Image (cartoon, rainbow over all chains, first blue to last red; front, side, top):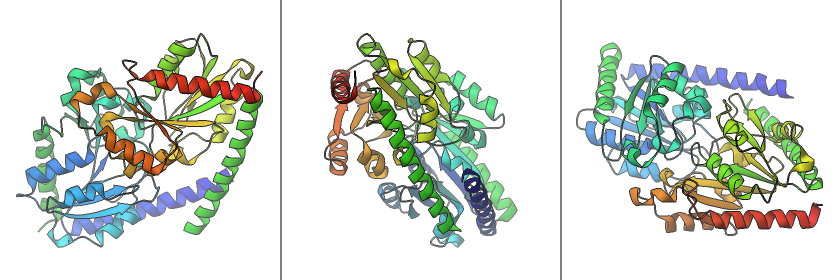
Length: 225
Length: 225
């Protein structure tokens, strides 16, 4: 029975990859940069998205897909900022997938978006295994989670384009060795960019905004209008 | 294809429940209380286990099963305290299951254990769906994760016997409404016990130790020697 499951899982993963590629082509045609935002529960994904909207919304047309097991708490917060948002409730599912993302794309004004931020379900394991059609993957590790997480949850750190060390404002109150964490992540993923930030105070977010704007420019130069 | 997957998933869940019942009978015969400890990554599972060992090891014979996607970091810490420990690495799997637990039981001195603490993989979603054979489920929610988590990840809170609000020492530096969180959890699960603790400073852990000792006594009165 276990072999059967593996076979079908591979079919599912294969079908997901195929649909993710179609989602990405669709985003490319519209010149939309899609970023998959991943982390543990409560590490700061929504705060990062709200800060990004606040800083960039005059320059960049932003839309958001919110993924949660249940509730519309995060989508409500994003909606109050006046950007287009679609909530996906996975009803127990532990990650978004390409099919859910396609459904969300069908409900967004694709002709009027430059940047699509996709907040995945809070989970440091499963989301890393499922492509959505995104161009870039960013993950947050918050200081209170501890500096040993790259060893315990390696796939997420291996797959990320950017790792944000969030809640850096709590550093005086916690034991967190940023140098040791950075070394572990770089060992798994030598090309990754690592920024220390506080999505609460705004500290360090300048590097994140610069990186994002460069990526949007790059996308427009290849695909956009 | 999706229907096939559901069918097989149900088979897996059914087989898991069956094996979990067998694990529980085996634990009962030895008079061992088994507690499944669950939370997000970095919420304090290992710290809780280390505090529990430190306080109770003179009175109670403790063993530990450590579940992680990768690494033996936590098992090494537990082992230094001189208690029996088995590390399970799930190699990408997002939760422990009854089969993994059975393998671990085969490698523990069951005649010499009163309390088995099982540290599940750090994940607020998947572990709640898979019984291991445990008698009680305890979950930790750490303050930095935020007070809205019961709405976003309801199953874990519904299934718990005890919820520990951990890292209460960080309360002065965070926005966390303990009353609102407690109300949300009690709404989902009226029988749950909720304790505010700091596994770092030891604050509030007395209630947890008392609860645990009562449960061990209860187990012994029914099954133990």
